[in-house]
Length: 307
Image (tube, rainbow, N blue to C red):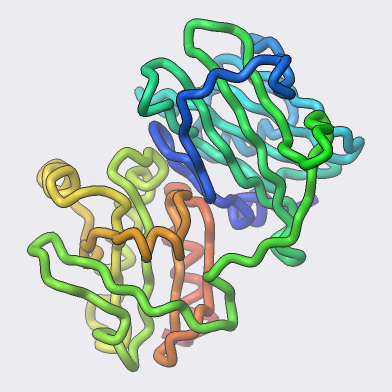
């Protein structure tokens, strides 16, 4: 059985309130069972499988729906839950009873209020780069969820696995990125040439991003004496919202705003933690986060880099 840490390491995203994960789309189309979507009713409460994960991320499930996968070893669940005062949708995927992927904060339809319409990539195996795509639709006032595993042959009750390698790969160079500071100046990776860079990919509406900030701030304070290490935050947000956020909460990473090109590299899953070495190679990549994520990063810095 994998440890909770390895569960969390395999997450491709954590966020809670409005986010579509990896290759996400929003449309105003309303699906039905006749559109090759499958209809399933929500149940009240929390599913027994994945319960350690819920405790780890302080998620309280109010209702959930179990999905058909057509694969006896894979279980998939979509639910509604809360972290503190923030409520949103979640998806979890388990293989042979072990958590392999989780998504918190599927986005509401920006075109039609009160409607979730999301396409979600779920990671089955990081080692083999296996992912599956799930499409879901739900009106908040209804107890019926519509979903499908899109496939050319129309068998939407059968999960489809495919190999997909993203642009961020451990052991390979991180693509050159150029973002903007809150003051509007350009910031690129070349500005940190010859240094290790700890990158935090986040959003102001991402609850796990906020939960982990005190620990990340402590990490910055612990290593601020080093000249060979930088801490860079890239926000999937706009300047006004981030500036307002930082007036209420402290976040000691160097703050920047993403661009369309950078978003295509990091994906729309939050938070994400990437470390590159002085040569620009990715040496650490963690999708998802929690309040103790700084301890994982610090152990890596201490043991791998002898910092």
